[in-house]
Amino acid sequence: SAIDAQSLNGLIKGFMDLVFEHDGRYYVADYKSNYLGPDQQHYTLEHLDDAIRSHRYDLQYVLYLVALHRHLRTRIPDYEYDRHIGGAVYLFLRGIEHDSKGVHVEKPPKTLIDAIDALFAGQAARAA
Image 1 (tube, rainbow, N blue to C red):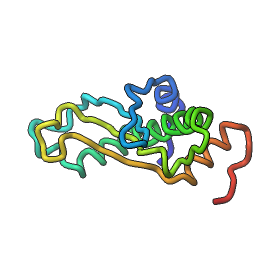
Image 2 (image 1 turned 90 degrees about the vertical axis):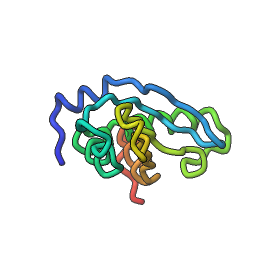
Image 3 (image 1 turned 45 degrees about the vertical axis):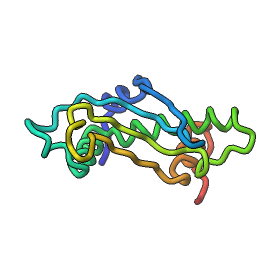
């Protein structure tokens, strides 16, 4: 869905909570304190995904991953997105006791990251 300028501005002014490496892959992590409901049944993977989409955290983590992609490309000589990026990890702190542990992990496709990277570089999006 479309995003208004104020919402986009809020995402762009944000900061990554954490970047970490595990088994040769790099991740961005963001801690969320969102209240999704009064008990742990509100923190299923489906509910976490709904919160990701409704708050546009999907756009937020794509921006974070583009920044990480650009950084790693300058630091790792044989850098490859598919090999070195693990994805985005969103930790919903109130869901830690649910089977999901309040964890939402997602890795956007390289084609999306490359297209946004090209747009930020002032180039037309390259065909996949």
